[in-house]
Structure formats: structure tokens, C-alpha cells
Amino acid sequence: MQVMAARAGFALDLAVHADRPALAGDGVVTYRELEERVAERAVVLAGPRRVHVLVAQNTADFIVEYLACLRLGHVVALVSACRADQIRALYGDADDLHPDLALLLPTSGSTGNPKVVRLSHRNLESNADAIVSTLALSEQDRALTTLPAAYSYG
Image (tube, rainbow, N blue to C red; front, side):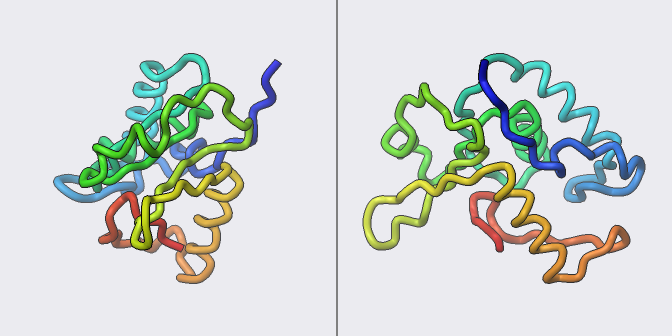
């Protein structure tokens, strides 16, 4: 029997905020709508735990895919579009996944070949909490994200 790690809470509690705006870009997506989209995508992605390679994009569809993967306990491997050709070299075939592993994040490779940083669900939750705390964000605030989705902020 495989022991699953605790999931990052932000991937589970979307509907709590109901009709508040969750994402804004080409339009506004409420938390309720985001929850529905994540739940629908999770049905498609359900199955044995695996590495799910995502080309990081600043889009609602990317956020939906990312949250659905985290919710299901899949390991997300983020790659930027400009490095998509390096996916195999970075991740190869992964069969034996550590139960706490949530995200594989490549470094920039500025001093050589990119390396992969392994993050757990607890790491992701802690990072999100630290950002909220440092910026003193409340439920009334909206955070503007201008960084590429593949960039580790925090």
C-alpha cells in the first residue's frame, strides 16, 4: 500500500472562497469556477501516481492543470516553453516516486546544465504561506503575478 503525503491545502480548498475572483486575465474566473474546472480536469488525470510534465504558462488552463495534478498527488515537473526540448534529459522515466514529492522544478542552468529541485506538498504550502505572510496579504487583496509560471517565487 502506498502512503500518500498530505496535499497542499491551496489545491484542495478552492470552493471555500465561492464567488470571489480567483484568476483575472482575459476574463475573471471565480474560485467556484476554478474548483469546477480543477475537479473536471482531475477526472481526466486520475489514475496511478506519476510525473506530469507541464510547460509552465501564465494561463488559467495551466493553473487548472497544475492544481488538478497536485490535488491527485501526481508529481508536477515544470518546464519553460524555451526548455521543452530538455524535458527528457531532466526527467527521463520516473517509476519510483517518493510519497512526499509534489513538484520537480528546474534551475536556470546558468552555470551549466539545469538541475532539478524536488519539492514536497509541505514545501509548496510553506512557500505559499511565507509569501502571504511577507506581503501581508488578506482575503481582500489581489496579487498581481508578472513572473513566468516556471519561476520559483519566494
